Image 1 (cartoon, rainbow, N blue to C red):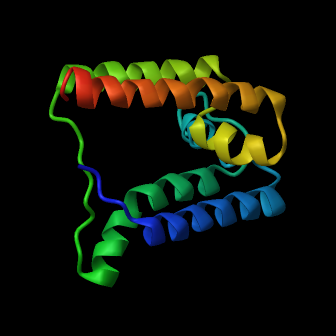
Image 2: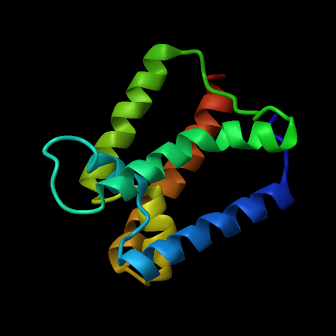
Length: 142
């Protein structure tokens, strides 16, 4: 069973929103993780390589910083089913490319800018996620 953590979720959501606003305000960029991470791969071009690298390093470092600050471990459950995880990763990657952005880019930044393309994307991936969770947790048993 997944824990209900409204305070942590609210604070986390506010920090994500704040970071998206700051990135847009100071850099004029959308805080879409797939776009930021993909621009770290060849061919390297454009500006702000350090900023993109810092963003990804921050994503990786955040759990360690949390553990250092609080003394508590980060509770994250990931499936041990490697073939399912590989298929999920490929599908998410394909969806990010095909949908011209990821969940963070469309769901956080796109919707706040009233982007019709983002509304369609979110209206597609959210119901798909709901059905996937229903099937894997209650039908298949994952």
